[in-house]
Length: 69
Image (cartoon, rainbow, N blue to C red):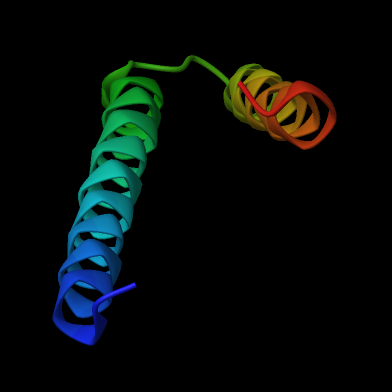
């Protein structure tokens, strides 16, 4: 394979990875900001919502690890 073409492909893949990572981080940040913005009446209520958020993240990581989608 042509070295120049290989470098172009490598650069394009790297750009796509960075773009996808930024989109993912932005999504989870928005979700966390929603939790933060809510008017929680008690600390346990807040902790429960954060725990639920963490479970969603764990589940998503598991799906990615097992199915890759």
